[in-house]
Length: 67
Length: 385
Image 1 (tube, each protein chain N blue to C red):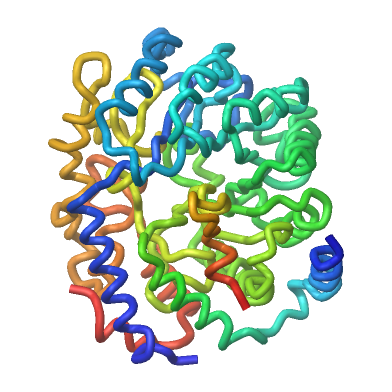
Image 2 (image 1 turned 180 degrees about the vertical axis):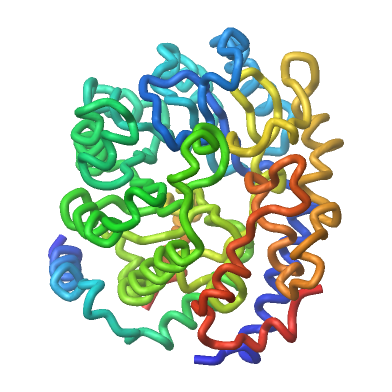
């Protein structure tokens, strides 16, 4: 899919641990609040099922990290 | 970014939902330790085969009957997932037969297998068969670059096979986690190895776990990490997470996470891994051990075994026991006594509870004393006991 390809390419170029600086403070807080508000408090704890959509097609990571 | 006042009520609500989970303990995950046998002999193995009597392993019929019994006895409306561990699960020649038999139940639909990748690399056609029996995820252990990985396993070629297995699994559409156990011999290559995995393999998750002082590590104590190195790992994960998490909704992206290392504090939780940690053992996670004993995750001490499916109904054990997993006051000793984070972590993960020790090793004071908690979190004055 073109969207994924573009996004992936962008991140690969820009993703260098050595020159990192925190640029996403507000987003990180937004995501953290969503984690805390998720109905099942252990929806994704060291288990991969969060990577799979549930019966209502909700996928934890798609919801938590939505823009 | 001091967000203590803003986020404190959310932590209180989250903690209340954890308390509800302890009371309700809905069955959502079955962790099946398929075997303790293994085709490798890793120096850092936490579940070594020599600790057990492999002749006690559940037979094909016994494990199928156990899954059938659970399907009949439990309310499966909230069930989500089976996690198969070992040993090396693919050493069981009947693994596919078991999965084929239980796949007739509609709720055994999301199954993950934790493996060293050797069998998959040698038998890549198994990936198609696994898909047919509802396996959707594969966790593959790779602990650094080739020489590091192979030297830990004492067998040349295992790294190539593990990497090949991970690559094939990603290509086949599985949700893949590459698991990296951080220890003193591979810590120096963590960042570069992560870059390699992210760019060349592209799994969904790159999971880092801290080496634990159990199993064969007790004979290889030089693998344990000094506190300063623990801090380096957390620093790395925090940096990577903060930088890349805005893209995590894209399933083609690789996420970093810290596995069940323990509670990091209200400041760091949600900033190092894509979830807020709480030990799930016995809360929603039932463990079937290799010999039919009932516990939770396979790396938890067998001193915490709660029952035996060979002689008891699993539902009765799940409902009537597990108090050590669901009522945590017994853990409130030692360093936990004065910790204001107790109300969130409840003593940390069960696998860190070593019988005979008054309390378990905890990450939180290590992170405090080594300066990673650079922002004094007002949560510590708000939440907790």
